[in-house]
Amino acid sequence: MKKKWLALPVACVMAGMIAAGAGCAPETNSPVVTVQDGYVYVDGIKTEIQVSEDSNAKTAFELWKQDNPDYTGTEAEWLSWLEELLDTEEIEVIEHKLIEKGIFKGGVQSGSARTASDSLVMNNAVLRLSESVILPFGESSSWEVNITGKLLTGSAAGTQLFVANPYSEFGRVYLGVNKNSKMLYVGVRMNATYINYGWEIKDASVFGTKHSYAIGYENGIYYLSLDGGQRQTMTHINFNQADQTRLTEPEKDSKNLNELIRTVIAQDYIEMTNIGIKDFVCNCEISDFTVKTSAINGYRRLISHPLAGTKIFYLGSSITYGSASGGVAFGDIVNKITGNPYTKEAVSGTTLVDNGASSYVQRLKKLNFAEKPDFLVVQLSTNDFSQNKPTGSVQSGTQSSDFDTSTISGAIQHIIAYAKEQCPTVKVVFYAGAVRGSWGYKTAYENYMNGDFKRICEKWEIEPLDIFHSDYKNYSFYWSDDIHPTIQGYAAGWTPLFVKYFEKHL
Image (tube, rainbow, N blue to C red; front, top):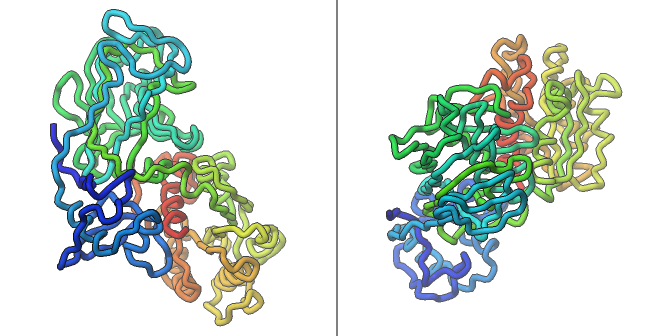
């Protein structure tokens, strides 16, 4: 099996970085090289090369050089290498034989695993691979996991068969199986929410008898082939094995799953390390477990999530607090995934407009800006509109004392100015949450967003986080009411948008 791939020229690359002058002669006609969303593009074609974007006006080469300081070649040599990169030479697909005729290549961390009748018989087992397996999910990537055997034996209800857990249990990605939901799936754990995209097997007894499963990714779509049969795209999504819903858009559904994976992994590949994991042990009988992947060694490996050291302050009301999800909202989930320091100052029913000690304006003073937060995230409050607070106007001035905080526009500008006075380096971001069409103040909220709020953001050079207009898959169980998300809505709908925003504006 061969795959067309953006291969890094061996003569030019060592440990993921170009070796100086290694036969990369300059070209006369240089390609147009840009950076978008953290990737290098050559003549408009996306490569697999990732760079840390900078808010300053730096060239693609300068950004790449920041991430690869050992490179001593010229920019012309770098451009020449990029042109070679687009020649897409053929390479053999990498094959990992993790279990072959019941023999496992790795170590047993807990439980037991023994070979019997050419199968690996696992009893409450957690296995650690001797070498991790990379599964990429970029646009030109492909891989296939082939498993033959009984996925669930005895009374076992489910397990996480193939697991990536590079940062914490709250950022886990896994290939799982569950008898109760009748699903084989690719899942992502975000805080206490398990989001499972996969395939419904109508007869769950299949998992207790010997079969062959091919789970793969190609052309941007996930698929399953059972016993060598026709490939099936994903059929269902569920949350914690409940709220199971049919999927109907293979490309969009696969893209949504990839966005969840990027949220917790922060890159375009999964590094699988385990067969089974604590709390999801394996009770299986597997004869063969093979992975074929187009992965190459040019990936940037991260020791921690890029947001791990990012300090974030949150200021808001019930939506920021998570009143419909036990006090857990996007800020708490981001912290669980990344480990970042944060402070959440959120009180239900409060307003931007300064109408007492609980207003945003007054509670802003409780935040300790001496801690030098990277972001101050402020909710564009729905309460101001449902309580018919005056919108005011976009006043001139740049000092916190310049603004009339008895109006929505005045309070917003006061908050921005005050935060900047206390910590000049803080990035202030206002977010507008999604609301249902049946919310009685939706029109007024949207008109304000499109009018004075937009002008305020332009004046202060702030890019708002607009969840109100965001295009993400929205299920009925994402909502508790017209404006408050459930924990599923926060985890699968909102959190990826916040993580993407923070990474972009770091």
